[in-house]
Length: 124
Image (cartoon, rainbow, N blue to C red; front, top):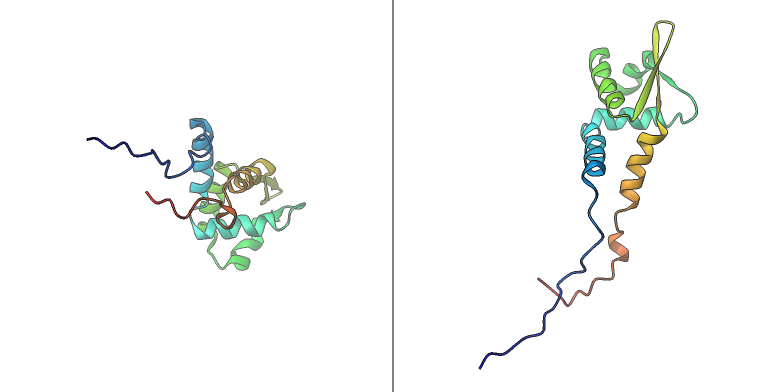
């Protein structure tokens, strides 16, 4: 005799997946932030929300060499997280609203594990 057991869904199905294009954009943004120096740079630049930061002050502020600074700033510009403006011989940088919005929107869309209401009695 065959016994039919009830089907138990071990977890909610979850939200729909990100579209490929959106996933690529978010991945590129987080790839640009995969280095601690770039995280520090973005934080330093975005802390001056309404004004730009001159590259001339960053090596001393962050304890990095000028070539290292240039390399990491270029990566952040390419990812669209910051923009560059030349003022005479100095480059000034500011955080881009759309770049910061990408980071904020993705993180805001993640669930808070403290507020998950999954049934702990169900295991897979």
